[in-house]
Amino acid sequence: MTVLVNDIAVGLMEDQEKRWQLAIHKAGLRPGQVKGYYTAKRSVDARRKDRVRFLYTVALELKEGVEPRLREGVRLAPEPAALRPVPGTRPMKNRPVIAGFGPAGMFCGLLLARAGYRPLILERGQAMEDRVKAVETFFAGGPLREESNVQFGEGGAGTFSDGKLTTRIGDPRCRFVLEEFVRFGGPEELLWEQKPHIGTDRLRDIVVGFRREIQRLGGEVRFGTKLEGITLKNGAVAGVTAGGVSFPADDLVLAVGHSARDTFAMVRELGLEMTAKPFSVGVRIEHLQKEIDKGLYGDQAGHPLLPKGEYQLSHRDREGRAVYTFCMCPGGLVVPAASVEGTVVTNGMSHYLRDGENANAALVASVDSRDFGEDPMAALAWQEKLERAAWQLTGSYRAPAQTAGEFLAGKPGFVTGRVAPTYAIGVEGADFDRLFPPRVTEQLRLGLRAFGRRLPGFDAPDSFLTGPETRTSSPVRIARDESLQAPGARGLWPCGEGGGYAGGITSAAVDGLRVAEGIIGAYAPPD
Image (cartoon, rainbow, N blue to C red; front, side, top):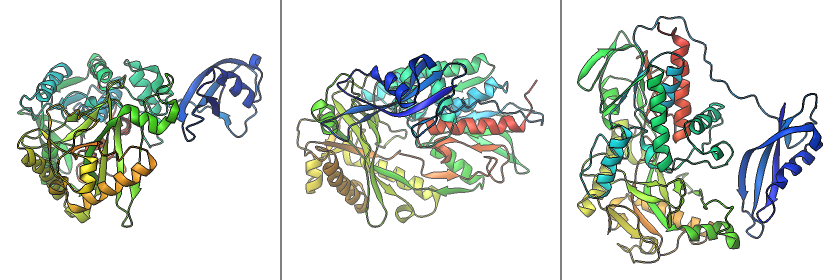
């Protein structure tokens, strides 16, 4: 039997090993009644900068016959969620097809492969080694490859990110996702840190491990193979065209990510239900990491036990519109993330050590039907128009930029200060009032000022703004019913971020698992 003991506080300057004794005492136990213990969760409490401390949840494994005294802060550990979906009985004529090998497609494919369903996975981009070369060539000023870039390719858009595994969903499958990332080479602290991350450098090898496991179990992954057509017959999937080849299919998982505009157009042309959904646009803001650490930790900044400082800030105006920070990358880089020629898109990326000089985050304002209407294709067009306008400001893949001081003063360009921009292709001074609609720039200025009051230095004049950040989430949602299939297209499974059902690596992975369970529950394993 295992009990979890919450809120074990240990000061930063104290011996962290004392958490074990504190947990045993709080649980009302004697050391001899405990056969083992481990950290179940750890977070930093920096609400008082003069008393920074760690808060632990400690798991105590009790000896046989010991009955715990459950009380406030002491509870039984839940049984681990076992993913053992019960197979259905309907014969499977054709193996399931998955379009997209990002987190949703990876985890959907892994669970299907382990259950013996031998999925066929189609990925429009390249395998990891070739994809990394294509991305690095683009970062160095070379050509953009529209089918293999920061958005498309093995591992999906999350491969070129911080590899964050935080999520707000409370699904028990989240634990399975973390355990699998550790199983394929992720750091052990993924299982207990409050804000787990892998880093783009380590994530790349892990993704390849997922692919090899799926292949070992009988699945197939075809790179450079874009989904080009879906055949429906009598309200059900009957075939797929990909890479210039058509073949029969009964089940197609659409795990294409938030940037597959051509796939969204294909779904619309099939007459399937799809709606526009709110998303957000804005800029990447960069600060010196040491200044963020100081703003969060005070005089304790730089202590070797403390993680790199990271923040998440939000504010709403009187109309309910939100401005917030998103995808904060401590010690990271702002990266070129375009997937269409003649556009500029930014994103953030960190390595596992987060040892870069700058911190960056998306500073974004929410947009919705008030900005682009109810038509989902209009939402996509609005997003792309913004990306093309950024290209027109610079005439290249160089990104338009301003410092916070100039932006707040309504002056174009930037004044060189302490923060050197990290955008690989280079930046050009611009006027964001010429790029974004007034509602967006108003929100961004509101956020800068509000967040500067909450995090000292956030609105410092030399904070560097690079834009546009447009791919925060999918602008569309493809409808699905309680079975997770698209109404009017049995066997079509919208999934993950591209379907509008996830917002990050972990939630996308969880949605991929749910869809895999749906397929398994409908069919008997193939012979």
